[in-house]
Amino acid sequence: MAVFTPVSDDQARAFVGGYPAAGEFVSLHAIAEGVENTNYRLETTSGRFVLTLFEGRTDAASLPFCLGLTDHLGAAGYPAARPLRDRNGQWIGELNGRPAAVVEWLSGAWLREPSPDEVARAGAALARFHLSARRFAGRRANPVGPLVWKVLLDRSASGAATAEDRQLVADCRQALERIGDPFTDDLPSGAIHADYFPDNVLFEGGQVSGVIDVYFGCDGPFAYDLAIALTAWGFDGEGHEIPGAVEAFRRGYESVRLLTWTEEKALPLLGEAAALRFTLTRLHDRIFHDPTKLVTPKDPAAFFRRTAYWRVTEAA
Ligand SMILES: Nc1ncnc2c1ncn2[C@@H]1O[C@H](COP(=O)(O)OP(=O)(O)OP(=O)(O)O)[C@@H](O)[C@H]1O
Ligand SMILES: N[C@@H](CCO)C(=O)O
Image (cartoon, rainbow, N blue to C red; front, side):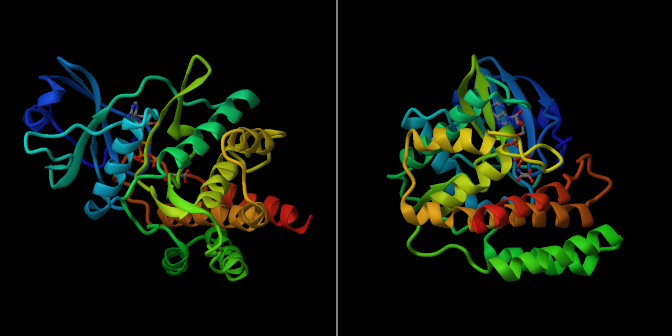
């Protein structure tokens, strides 16, 4: 479960006291999902919120971009969780040595087996994210871009102890050499989510009710964001294609924003890059997993399997 940094009721009460819009502390419940940050469901006299403590990969310097982006999206009517401001007008405070924030609670739940229509709605919501963020002025380089892929791979190579991990390191190295840097200048770019997985899209009554976890958000090609999402939504937990899901997501996306010819041409390589990117973070996290933390590492091989789909698509 994703509690890397425990918080007591008294600590939460004191912290929440600094956010006038949050009301008074009532209770705190650890949220079992997620692998990156510590999340608590916070009940107060004003309602329900999320208390997040930002851990390793989400550095404090990136938070003004991430929280600024969700605030911008929320203000534009997009279902993103806006952060609350403290007494000094700041979004970010410090709790137990970690940067921390209180954000709106969004209703709904993520879908383990979305129907093709729901997948298409998720696709449309990603395109709306891209369009709604067009005027957002913040800038952030991709924290897990091509240079970092190489760092993750080299670190994984140095720590891989099992035959399976060593094989995956070798496979990833080959893929990395093939892919190089796929982010060419002619791809339309802007603020992207960069982690648009099913567990980051909440649904209520068949409609998208919330898009959460914008902490990998950064500047990047829209088509790469789409490629990440297709790679996440189009395949099952084992990495096998879900018939029709890639098409449904793309149909939904293009019902809001049409791809350019350049994007269309780049999509298979970007898809392979997306599959590699998540294989590498998962592989790295599995190898360097701290067994004292209550987090179950995700399977990297299921993501590497997706590279084959994109290579076949590219060759077609
Ligand atoms: N604003 C919100 N409204 C409602 N629920 C939320 C909100 N933010 C987070 N959650 C809940 O907390 C869980 C974990 O949050 P989140 O995905 O941000 O964590 P993470 O550790 O960054 O996860 P990930 O592994 O996807 O990077 C979500 O699956 C969801 O159930
Ligand atoms: N969505 C990521 C984890 C959080 O970034 C994955 O499934 O590997």
